[in-house]
Image (cartoon, rainbow, N blue to C red; front, side, top):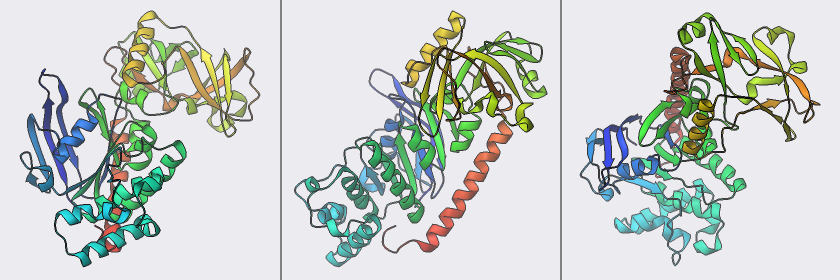
Length: 417
């Protein structure tokens, strides 16, 4: 296992376009780091630079304290799992897993021991004599992971390994990858565009936008304290609602009424005229379901429900509102950049599944203003982000990870890491 240090890394292609632009990132020994962002943000390019499949234009890459910019991929001692599995169809599962050991001329007894131990970890023992064509997608992905394990590499690198699987298998494989990484305690860098994978797998998540890091933090900090509009819009499903609001002293006038700000938030928006109020769907409620004990920390409003979606354990209501054209254009541009459904001028609110709201009728809603964020519509900066609270969330996550890594090293099976 090894620490990976990325210092001011740049990747430019022939036309001068920076696919990765001045990226600096420190991945701790044993950490599970997620690289996430929409298509074209540079996450796969960065991963390929780490493994050595892409040349580095400028900057430094250190693995285990050693600069590896000019080292060939085979000399970096990293194991990579690809999106398309990259299995040899004519070889058995055993020989696919053993392939890197055969290349390094490992003795047969040692090959058998390592492959058997990896097969036990991945529950592939009964499939060792089968060919890849006779395996399910999830089993093929486990074979690819087995090949990575037996190398006893410094780190695992995953390039969107679950994107070819159906939804049910993705969920199963997410759990298996998380369990395996915790068990082995090995440094892991995982690329995905799926925010569910990012939020459930990573110790920390690095959000990229056009080759530039936007925020590196624990999943909880990204969710609760996003640094800008891009991160707030990318993390969360359904996405955060962005409501146009005019500043009136210590209050914001929104399409859903006036929202009073606490002293910290009021100071952050002082002197501004138009801002965006960000509220996640789950911070709304049907007003009739709100406990009296917390009602005072929020704001109630009445609005017409356009559409409802009942999902069994939850329910969504869609509430249209009016917004200036500049705000509409900003939300359209953000939607295109995020590769997501259009962030239209409607609020998506999550309400109790037993709520009896009806489409086309007015209803009373409540939302928790203590969890709202205020953004600058021009720069996208989160004006009310509590940096100290966010840092504490990531500090706790890091502490938990370090304890898990220490436990994994004590219990790690011999020969598989």
